[in-house]
Image (cartoon, rainbow, N blue to C red; front, side, top):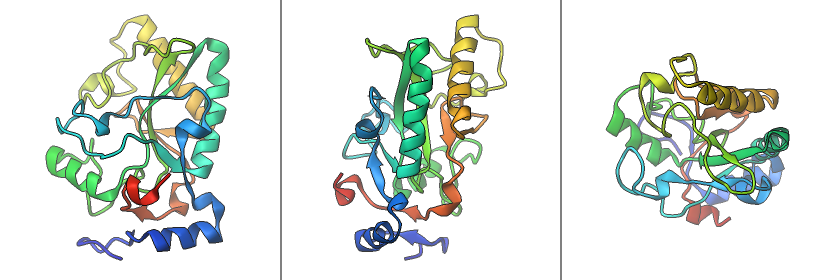
Length: 208
């Protein structure tokens, strides 16, 4: 199925299931189940986000299988430092990306609907750091989705502990192949993203 911008878009659960049957890596999996100790902080299932209202009807973080495997390795890398990952968002249905762009209207911070997002492919994650054991968040340069200059990874007018935490997150993710979007310290793409289609399936349809 194609959207008004003529993007190839998977909107049918049957088509998605057929892709998974042909290639198991196409599967969207529950990140909390696949990444031991991952702390969910799923903002778009709450009103604590840019829109000021819930955009998801289910608080769930899912991603393609290779992304989940790589994220579990990041978690293992971070553990000796006494920290782990929290996840703010992962797979994002395409219609939510459209809603974001209508709200923000800035390609620097929101994927335009005529291109779609790597979140729609199940290949991007928005993550932060927490203390192992307590799950308490570690200080990072800004709040999640705070679209200010301080969110850029090149912004260095920050306390030393924030710079250290940001460097630790960037290094841990980078060593497992994730590529950061520089305007947002929390956003990372897995390099496998070109292998996957854009999806507009709800969490209820996925039934994970």
